[in-house]
Image (cartoon, protein in one colour):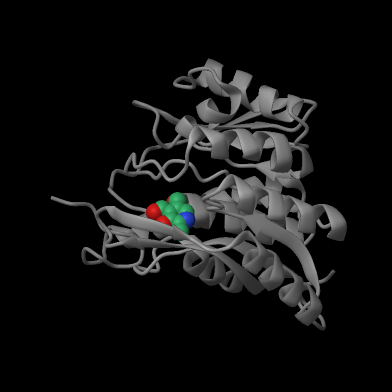
Length: 262
Ligand code: PXL
């Protein structure tokens, strides 16, 4: 589908709502639209947070999530599904059923742990993601803690990131990017595509933000929906997040991507 002529490709963002609009489906829609891709949403949960901590997460009924997805599919030409916070194993099952039936490519951000370290999911959720959605994914985008929860071994350096990325492909995903933003020292992302491993490294941009994972996966989905190759889409997503991080440094606390606390 061409993004230049006629209707752009649409990405259906399935995830939680964030009242600060820094993360969740709000960040997804902003990211997708800014990269020339149409967006649709299915909300899985309300993540009540204030930009500093997550106060509570209220999940919606799995059937309601599936109904939103079906309505979005009926409304717009969905080229790709992007999943973020799914919150409960039963929602994972409902989403897997719709994605499987529709046969649409999936970018899976296995949201289990926020950048601030907060748990956004249980071990049962990690298991459900690994068993039901990872096998359907075109690409999975865990951070270190999420990769570890999925593969059940520690992921804390580049070597274990490479093993985790391979293991996620072994679970049935076509590719995995393990994001190294939380590594001590260097920040390296590791991509496994089933044939080779690619390391992407960059200088760290210091700060204290949330929503970077959502923006990364949404930008990656936008690239793939526009027909870009996987490696090029990963580079585009990294560029996009880098720009957001630089902008966040100039924004007041509580802004979209939160500025560093000093
Ligand atoms: O960045 C992880 C994430 C995803 N989805 C929602 C969130 C968060 C983190 O706070 O609130 C809705």
